[in-house]
Image (tube, rainbow, N blue to C red; front, top):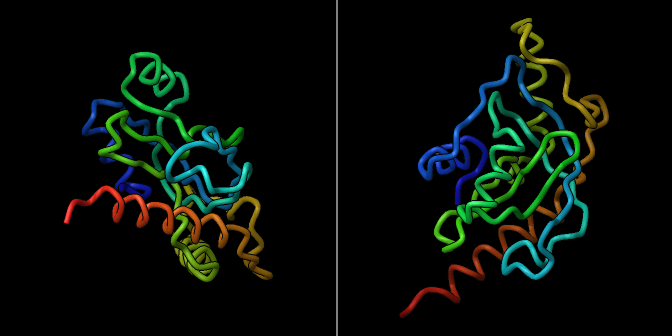
Length: 158
């Protein structure tokens, strides 16, 4: 399992090129669950929110070409930011480009830090109010990690 930069590192490991962004992708974004039968994403809501905080990603047509070649299964997509969860067909690598593990305060802290540093490459977080933070991704986080741990347990021989 690779989360955010870890997911991008795994993608690069399997030969998927990464695009560096001029500005930080920052905020909470809605994604669509693309595989309701999948062993991990199958229990996640049809639409779910997840924090993003990164300076890189994968271009949609690049990862779609990898899917056509049979190199990845696409599991979640956001109209605003592209594909957010995908895996290798052998299920060895699961990549989540978001931060489902983040508590709300983490986005607030990052926003305050970046504002204090007057970073020109970081805008305020999208779809997230730092003055009145609301965690809209708790259910996604709980279900995603629960299903991942369940999969690890069931696929381990003792």
